[in-house]
Length: 201
Ligand code: GRF
Image (cartoon, rainbow, N blue to C red; front, top):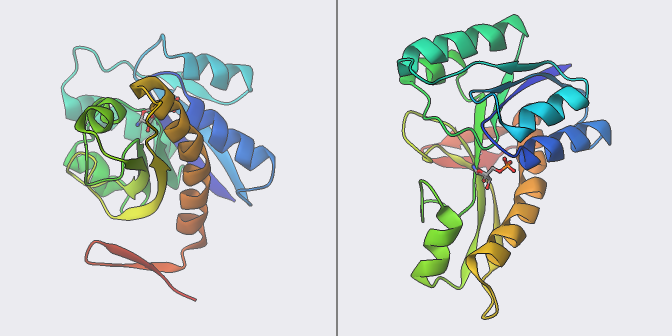
């Protein structure tokens, strides 16, 4: 049984999509062992509690990055987590954190990386005037929005869009992409060659 740990800071719709996929059997042989937020007021943590999941708040405010990371990693290990899914977790992980889970930390970003890393990616893409944007699920490394790409989904930018309608259509694809990426990683049938994730038979 695979043991997932979810890290979030806010709304938690990607967390809910993952939880729904597990409940529906779309991610076989997996469970969410713990949901951790660095913010007590994250709606996602209330949702996790309502679903009867282990839900922890580990505040980051006022702590050095690695001090906070050590608390989070201790909680993940205590819950025997073997795959960490960042789902709107608004913290950069320290190199030490990344090294604790080699090729076992995923993140979702609402653009086609390497375009528009960082905050408000949908607004950045909209303002730039791209005709295609989308989302990316990637391994987490020491750099922001940077590790090897696992799954991407393209979303066309319509003339009638504003940044909110574009973000909403990207979010629908995020929810599909995260489940696909988790299955790729849990099935383990891939190699990472340079930056390229290549599936194996
Ligand atoms: C998503 O757009 C995700 O791509 C980004 O943060 C947002 C989180 O949304 N990393 P939610 O909390 O999963 O609803």
